[in-house]
Length: 270
Image (tube, rainbow, N blue to C red; front, side, top):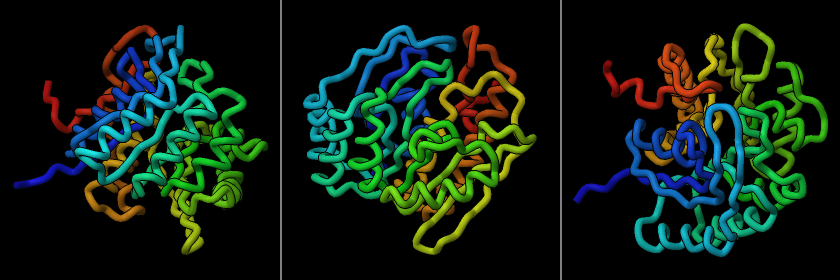
């Protein structure tokens, strides 16, 4: 019997379908993985605003992870919205318990519409409890600024920030440059074991449809790792995928705010 490549997402649900669990599962499917989920919070949101957050109790989040791991297992894990210190502690505990490999942490803090998705008292728990347990973290510039307690705004800032982020205990940092003010959107991959910086430039796509971009990129890294691709190649492939999804989604209208990317641009023909 054949086996699927398996990817588990531990994240919040986006009722608008553009980010969170929904974006993760779409990305896994588009990239050839069987996707599973442990939902950490329900959100009432659309392309414009988050109107409510309903946290899932940490114990039940642990039960979801246990249910997946005791039966199906996984080849890689993507972690998104965690919301509270208690949830962060539970997820870290389960990563250790199940000896999870190929773990990708997207330190989600603020939605595209500007709403807080991580409680302020959870930042320290994220830094000290969870980051040391994962394979790679994928912060954008505002998230890196919060984690380092200083402004990270330029490409020059990113180099020092990537090294300093690695000091938190995770050896691989994908620092996303979508908030740069350049014409190009340059991400930076830092690998501590070889002390190498890899620039990943791409032409900036002029589109309002960028909701879920971070979720999608981190899920694409996860999917590639689940398929056995090396880390640097997994990141390169993910950058290519998100650039294609942004480009293909630019001509569509979904909602009245920040619409989603086109996750299935290689599969849908219309």
